[in-house]
Length: 127
Image 1: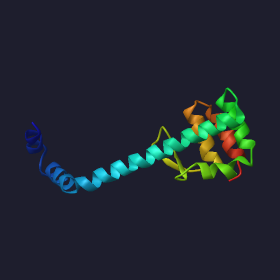
Image 2: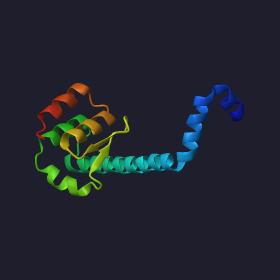
Image 3: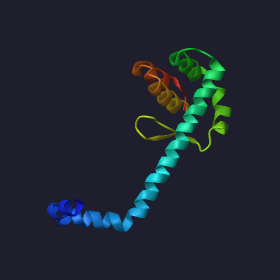
């Protein structure tokens, strides 16, 4: 079936398949490495969520993030807890450095905090 599809698709498709087959190890390694980096970033988000819940002990993430945005001393110890020094967004497969505004944005979006409140909180952080 695959051979029939390649014959019908023309020479360009055959060239693309040949290129992929000749470089498939490299492509697959890049995809797996990116997956490992995303897993590390998601683990860092979980670590930060646990830290914030433990420190502020509130029931709503809006309240927790509001208190986090106003706390200047928390970032000093936070960077040492998060290794490698980046976090991953659960929606866009993107990586961000460990900075207060990115932490607020990523955790807020993850837990459904309104965009208006997130914008206000990220605008007030000094970084």
